[in-house]
Image: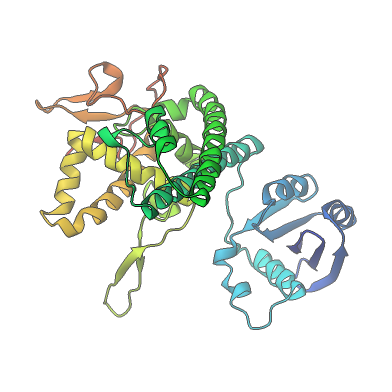
Length: 379
């Protein structure tokens, strides 16, 4: 089988073809968009396997190449030090290195979800982007008020409620501040409308997905956290160990060990930051709502206030392993009551009240064997 390395760009691409013995057979330069690239790939000798680095549009490119190649592998660009650390780097050299790595079977491959999951992820990221922009506008409104010596409306009402908006209209300020305030409030109203629209679409998807409903049985885990985790994990069975899920989301510490000396640093922060943010919010809520998780959190804190953030990140990592085990086994959240009996949220009388951001839950089958980490009990 031929090995093809592809360094792809929007208007120009390079291909390097190796034969069965790993010797360079041909090198091609394609000038033009992706349809022109596909026409060139149709002329390659068969059968062949192809490798390219993940970038914008890698899903579409993977689907197109899968129809033509015997095997398609998408390389993780952050793990291709052979390319991005090289002193001699250009498209032709990069395509040659991709072909050689593919021939040797050492490609750091990434998981490519199907079209529906990719669209689901885009909606999740779009909502996160809109929420961040709305928060930035709200901070600018507070900055305008603070520049005039105004902090917040009376009676502790929300600045964004009708009463708070009426209070803003009554404030005396300069013409520039009034113009800035009017434009910022208009942007906030637009973002509110867009967030509601995207949230409605995500809720429809989440209510139909059994995995999302299953994870929402965990105290503190709402619709937004469950859907983000399920969308990015996609298939929990692709992880040979539940511990690898925490590493996938960058919730494990960096390690620099040598000669028997072990050094652990900050978390790696690999993977999607949106999921880490949702997991962190869920961890805070879970500590408040679940006695089981609160006990685990307090053991990690060790009565040291400086360890609170470390404990929250550890809870996030633990929740990742629990969620992965639940998706594999199909079982709902389980815990031990005060009498030491194993209970589950599906048996009625849950461990805590449901999170505020959850939608009405549908019944989920608890079939399947127990997976590690599903039963949340004290060690």
